[in-house]
Image 1 (cartoon, rainbow, N blue to C red):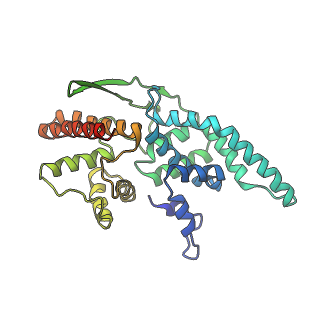
Image 2: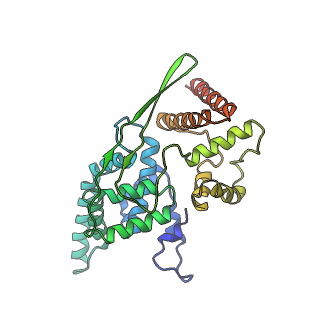
Image 3: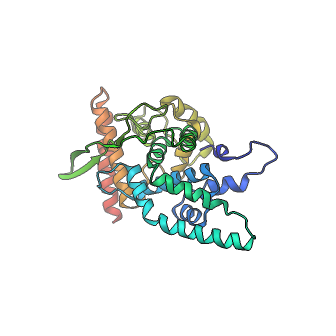
Length: 308
């Protein structure tokens, strides 16, 4: 991700090293600390970055069958503790006003906007979270424009699409995977999220790994980050997603590989990704790859049993 889009002033005289370092934090504890410390309440773009970081962590940790799209589930989850965060900002603002003899506490203004964003304007946040993975910069500026022009627009109606239940059998054991198509917003938009039947970034990397198993191509070396920039250029050409997004995706698997996971939620998501890829391949002329994908699921299942 290109963090320079968050720089308020585009000037070589400004040093954003520390700001970029903090904004680049993606760990669970790190992002939660930045959230509760008020770091993400510096301005609107910073607030949207905070939601994006927390949303990614929420998706990785929570695989709950609620029949809600991931953005809506995240927003509902975020609302639970928001009243506490808002109260803390309000108390801080009062103390700041007293100690500075009348100065305003700027982060409280962003908190007020954030309150609108998760309640009255939640469709803006939903659309931003849906599209940020495709092109963060474009989704960011689109959301900021929507926030600034809110009041002239009518809130779109949200339609929940029925989920599809899928069953596969491996080693005489039934595994069920629930695939959600998410929510649909009426009207047309300039930017789109992941469409049904379109491979995600991780699924593309798994496909390339399966091709490497078949000796068709050279395998991506996740321990050699020096090649990530060049590989990101190629991957950008495959699906049009930005090079910075692909570099971030490759860095997610640095020194651990594409099949790494932590906890039950990430493991289930990994199996779901491979299963979805296998289903798409089976409809094509590349059936051996579908067989390879199914074998990979069995291999992962067996390795996990040995670890338990």
